[in-house]
Amino acid sequence: MAAEDRPTVVLGVTGSVAAFKAADIAAYLRRAGMRVRPVMTAAAQRFVTPLTLSALAGEEALVDLWSQGERALHLELARADLWVVAPATADFLARAAAGMADDLLTAGLLARGVGRPVLLAPAMEGELWRHPKTQENLARLLGWGHTVIGPVVGPLASGGSGMGRMAAVDDVVALALDLLSRRDLAGLRLVVTAGPTREAVDAVRYVGNRSSGRMGYALARRARARGAEVTLVSGPVALSPPFGVRHVAVETAQEMADAVRAAVAEADAVVAAAAVADYRPAAPRADKLRRGAERIRLELVRTADVLATAAAVPGREGRVLVGFAAEVGDPAASALDKCVRKGLDLCVGNDIADPDSTFGSATDRVVLAFPDGALERLPLLPKEEVADRILDRVRDLWQERRRS
Ligand SMILES: Cc1cc2nc3c(=O)[nH]c(=O)nc-3n(C[C@H](O)[C@H](O)[C@H](O)COP(=O)(O)O)c2cc1C
Image (cartoon, rainbow, N blue to C red):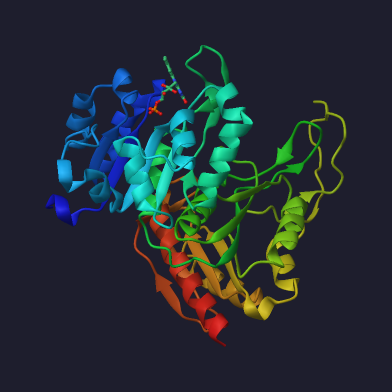
């Protein structure tokens, strides 16, 4: 592809020890099909050489505001599809927030104005990060609509550990790509449930299930990337909440139902991807059950129905409700049945006996069931793409409701 056909990303690099990570960001963005134009401050060049950035970006690393004379390089860079500054130092945040323009990076950012996507990934020692002036600068940059990722808690260059480490390179790249993607869900307020629930047997043990949460998290991540305001109600999983999503951690079916009830009143759509326990131990013990008798009985009682709880919140007519049906074997019939029985707008069925489409897999082969009996079988797709297909349907239904 010609350089001009690719989306252009300006990758600003400032003088932090984390500057070496910008080399990976440049390489990943380039591999994702972006034209990457590195811009380095003078301090950044003390940490990594322009040669490293140039080699990995496949473009000359730019360091000098004056290098193209009257052609005003900063104005050309300002028009890029996206700006990413990673790492962003405290000093850079201060200069950007003050509207200074004394080097190529700050001059370009100022010329970019507000309202065009800019992603900042701060990296600094905790003291610098916590300083009220840094926080004030950050608030101003956020107020202009810039997106900030991190920093996160972790090992710092000083040898200590704490808040200030730059967000993971993968997360910076993923968010950068998201910022370049479509925004067709802007204005949609969405509640997503994800993961398993755990129902206590005693102080140590629980009844749970094999749900990994990957489908629900993919839905939340894609919806957020497409502009939705997302609340993710999640059972215990080994996944980090997607950036920019409101995350409510729960454990039991009852807690999930309560969290959903609280969130639904303000929602335009609910996508219930969690694998909620249907039964829980009738009388969980506060102590630990000891090994003893050869055979014991565990009495189970029905749990709260999360979908029914969501459906019962006033305003159902204007709200899109999507459920999931996991089945061993062809899920079409049970997805259709669940769709009608629970009054859903869409039910997503998947066959958990299929190793490509089961708990924890990276892919899914699902069937979409609609209340009028229609079925749509999707091919085997990565979970993120399945999420996008489901969200396309949610978008269409939401827009229809808004019109009527
Ligand atoms: C070894 C070393 C490491 C540094 N690491 C950071 C850092 O991680 N974050 C930060 O905000 N400043 C850091 N600084 C300070 C900045 O380099 C300094 O404020 C510089 O003026 C930043 O310039 P720039 O924002 O134009 O790149 C570090 C300085 C030194 C000497």
